[in-house]
Image (cartoon, rainbow, N blue to C red; front, side, top):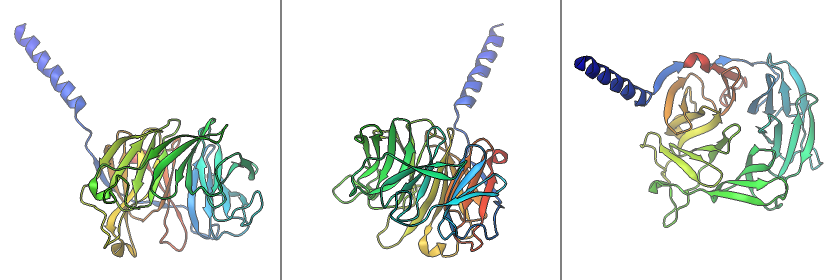
Length: 327
């Protein structure tokens, strides 16, 4: 009986050890499915999958409006938006985002104007967004019933949370980086780099990746909570432009990023890119090589499908990847 107990004990310990081991990173090659190659889109630059199987696309050179709403079979439902100074017009091409209650918002960064988009009717309505006309806002990242979270231009702050009722800033997250090769000499501020920021659905947590650095940062509304160096061999160099990340999207379970990790001269005609998938603890879970370069992502969590745009293809297609089959 004593030996049986020992064997059982060793077996249980081995099971515990296996369960606590880190999950191995999945490597694979994936072929993207081309969805649109006709004249419906002229120059799509942003895409958003929304509730009900609809898609909202910003089409910068599109005729009859440059914000387009599609059904899930890519039938065009509505086309709206034009350049101008009117209350429902745009000074430049806007950004799009999904709110916490699945509303769709459109942000004009040049006028600091936020609109709610009715995807059924295609109508825009102006949302209260009290900021200084001189404030430089890169993008609005999240809209909740009580707050608006936005990304400041430049590199002083990663994000700002503002009350929708009072218009006052509630909190900010300063962009200070642990690695010294990021920092301006003598400060804790980041050498300028475009960054891509995404909100975790239904939670005050955000993920950021950068053009020039192979770094992932996860923050809450007040501070950096996770900082991961991905590969450790991609550093900022004033004499050369290294392109690391160009897009990020998120679900409740994962962060999806497009990664190149090459000198810009090597990317004049890129043929592939990598899809790096992280969990919300910042750990790399999947490293998938895609057969098309992408620069913007959105995720349909209900279907488990990732959608992206290829900036190098003159046919302006939208691509999709079924990630349920990639697990």
